[in-house]
Image (cartoon, rainbow, N blue to C red; front, side, top):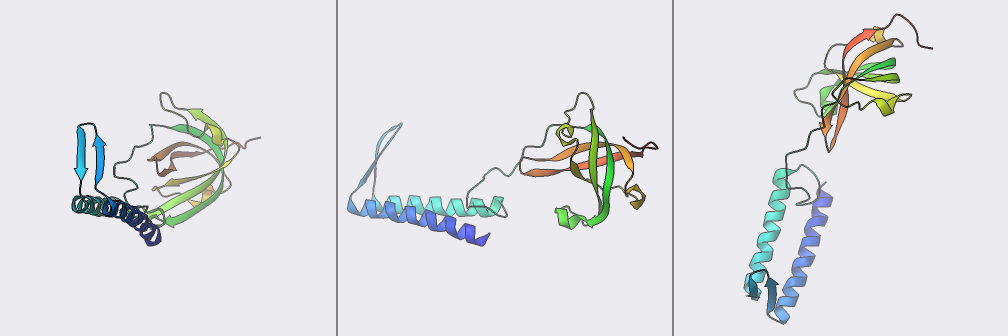
Length: 182
């Protein structure tokens, strides 16, 4: 992380040095929408230094990692409302710490590995599991799930929660089916 930030600062410093060299050779004239402005060497240095400082501060204040000034909007766009009812075989069941998933406060979470056999729509919401049929899907729950679910066929509600940076599938309302799937 610090190496990427260092690289970003080096890039900004390189551009700043180019502007300073250009300004030393001659006065710089910049055309804008409002007319013509004469930029002198001291004002150019002050402006570029201010841009550098604001870029570094905004990058540090809004993001834990990434390039300096990479994103200035700290608000994220949530996933559209979605839900489906899946029929699946439980291939794995384990307890994990929420700190692994960057969820606070620290608590026990339950992770299931499901082989999805069927996916049904829940109107009017979108179905994000339709393309997962025949594939293994990792789902999470805060509700206590028993290890007896292992190798059982279940029917459950699944939703995807997250934003444009990522997310997870969550499961609830699990019912064990008495009949095996063909």
